[in-house]
Length: 152
Image 1 (spheres, rainbow, N blue to C red):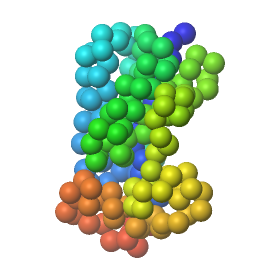
Image 2 (cartoon, rainbow, N blue to C red):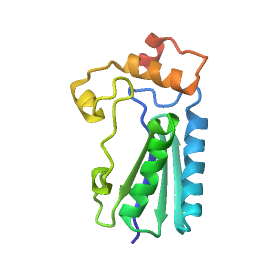
Image 3 (cartoon, one colour):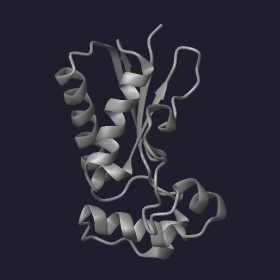
């Protein structure tokens, strides 16, 4: 009967796990744990799912949903890699807390800086473009050929 923190990475396209993704996910989980600990927020339960469809972590935490959203938004906005973090707070009634409820602006596109939902909805950028940008952001040096990535 506590809010849930849901953590995934914003990885577009069918291939969700490639070079540097496991380390990026693990660092995100560490940062969430540290932020909760630093704020003296008790975690009642934690679980992870690691599938080829993507990695997910869940935390049940003893704080108000708005406090958790503010704290987790700071992680999302704190570094360039944090931009890949997708941290949702789910209230006890199953509804998500929006960034706007905490006074934060909506997320921006990785490439052009416009509101992310606009670019996503209109498919303004290709999956290839987005993945190349993510690989660059992560310092990924081992490239998977684009044709192979799209088949997986």
